[in-house]
Image (cartoon, rainbow, N blue to C red; front, side, top):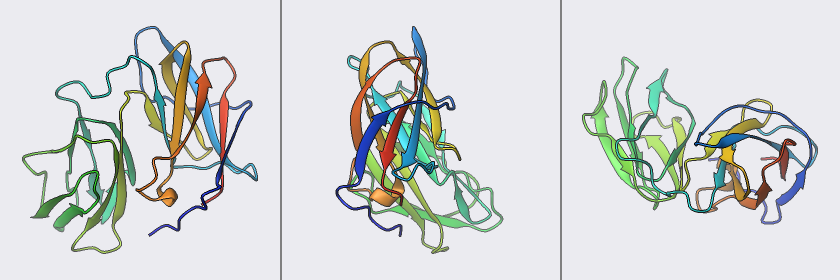
Length: 203
């Protein structure tokens, strides 16, 4: 399992950057966000979500996402979804997998199977579920569930761009190294043409 970060890991600064696309809304505009370490190194694979006041916290009925298995690994290793999303677990390998989570956010088990299970798993509570496979111990992934439709995952340059309505909001960043018991670091966000940089202790 990844090591835990120290409690005094978070510090935030607004500065320049540039980034990718993740959610969308009417009258929304791209807001650039970059996650870097205190030393200035980009942090890839961070879940970034923006809470917008008045936005419905749960996903629209029928919202689905996929957490697949390829070459005996979960793909993607980190999936971010809105609360209420139904997640499918398609197995693209020639071997069977046995997917499970003991996490309080969503305990579940899909016993040894091939192909795609008939029923998806609905993630109805915000938080983080750590996934494993009972057959292949090295398989590890996380599903991070947020109460907002505005979210994304940072790329290799620590960058993500999320379309959000104009105004003042809250941005939260979570990384697997923080552990599923921590919600992540949060700060104020005011939409602007300049990107927001969030600095964290490196994993």
